[in-house]
Image (cartoon, rainbow over all chains, first blue to last red; front, side):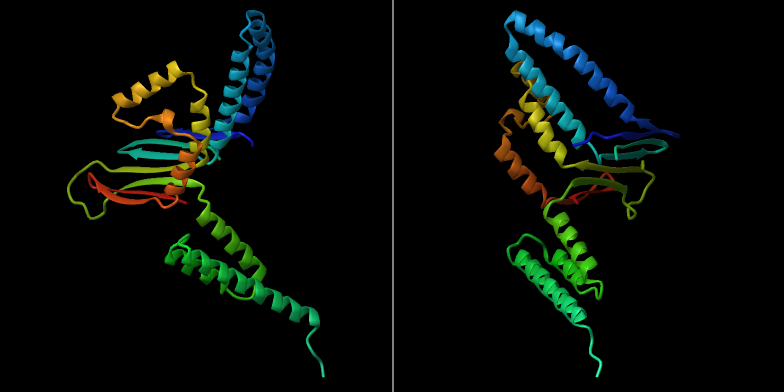
Length: 87
Length: 166
């Protein structure tokens, strides 16, 4: 499963491709940095079950991000336009 | 004196066999109620497309897979061309992957009870009366199966609303 790599967003006349592939490495790096500290902190506090729960939520959120691929939203109301597309 | 190479004969026989088995598969799906008469007709037209049997076979297979395993739910709102009067014209075209439903339920099942209650209260205040906590894996399978037969055509406020899976 691969999360969306780019996202098209258009509001009124302004449209832009957002390079999500630049975001994912940052998110993964942050998680790898933070998770060990969370693990140590929670194991000292004796609440390690919270860590596993957090890990499950992160994996479920990742799965959710992957399943968003293919989402397409186009709304035109009078002269207002909104487009979102995740290929 | 000259005869066609045996390989050509064999290829033709294999193509015919493939076509027959695919037609049989389509008819079985129709009799089992898995596809509608229109869908069966479309698939049968594909199988009788002609000489490029292998290409047709793969097209039929992918079309069957698409019919039996729809990937998206599509919501289209367009102004009704028959409507009269000077009313606001809205165009909406939304395509939502069905995988989101399963992933969303998985994620929602991990939400702590307190947060889940807050979400439920918020949905209730907006008029959604369903209880999300009761949506388990079996109910989800039933929901997705029911969605495969979903097709709504309605006229609301001088707009045509279409909801279907594809």
